[in-house]
Image (cartoon, rainbow, N blue to C red; front, top):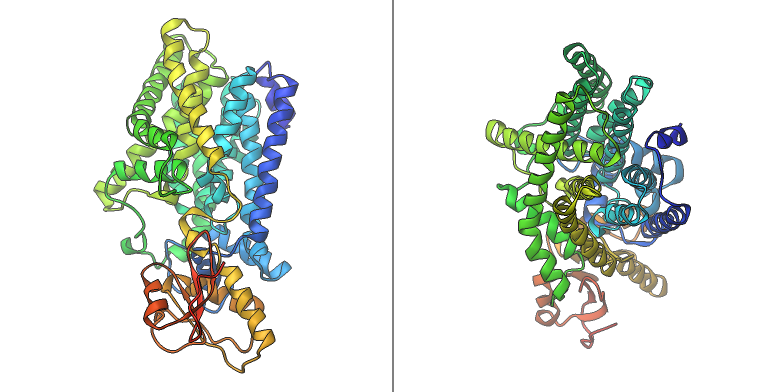
Length: 507
């Protein structure tokens, strides 16, 4: 079916470009698998397991950390294959494969130009913050993959110019429902995408009102109902306070996405390129979104005036991406002012990164070959995405997830404690730690099941213990208590220390 859908758009990029993109995306998929298998578990992943996916505590209340569909998938994975970092992350890893496949197919639909095709494949896949969630045990990766498969299917439906394949729209509606179930934040762009597609398709293929009602019914039955069925039970206890993650302004939302895209490695001395992208992004992002929305309005008006002119690849991607961005913004503002909900921030705004990238790619493709002025309009996003891809590549890593960098060495720390216990067994071992490490240390206690290790609490590092795991301000205890440093993680700065002995810096 996918081969038939791809032929709808006409010419495809040259074979060498497709092979190059395929090898590149396959390499990223392999990196995701490697990260899932080797990186230390993080606090939020461990919290997800212990509270929702099968650990010590039952699910009692809805929490923003509870990504319902992912919870059930992770629970099934752990039940089938046993508990490890990789089995807990397996649903996200598989979703990452599907997301990268959607990147390849969307890039093919965008243009037959090898350069634009490769720019699209790189800019949609190489963002380090997006890559984090294509392997981390959270619901963002599955939601992202499902959302962009729906986007791809709906773009194909618009390009056919007929209702020859209504199953494609039904499948897209189901993907949007599952995306919202995997992470509730995706309900906003899912609703916006469904609305934009329905309006565009109804204008595209009159009569307008009957077709709009038919499409709306399709999305409600195959979109809203499955999502409600999955989310209804956990949401029964939700209140406004359950949705505590967020910020007060859209500018803060934008800044969070920009920071984790271009400052993912968070060096103490930012590079010239990093500073340039940070400064340029603050005016370029809203400008590009505004241009994309305006171009979408022009496409819809032009199609309606000319009796439903069939749109092509770049125009369709721009129409869907720009319209979805505008609709999502409207829904977020409405939720903020009518329900008092916060705007998304950092990972809860993850969908904005590839959505904005698609707006830029759509502007580039739609302005190609239209003369000098449109060509200059498309040059700005092309230069921006090229520079962004370079910065993405410079930040590529296989060791940590940006928002939980402090946990980069937790697995190593636990294994050092286990190795020392094997050489000098003790009947009971107590570990005190900076509170951030409580979920991840207890995850490894559940994974390895050492009978000698007491449960780690959130009481903090004060008090007597056999080992101390410290980071941040708690590092002052090393000198204050005369602790001996056994290990210092080079990425996070976290320290494993024990009482007494000579103070050492450790590797």
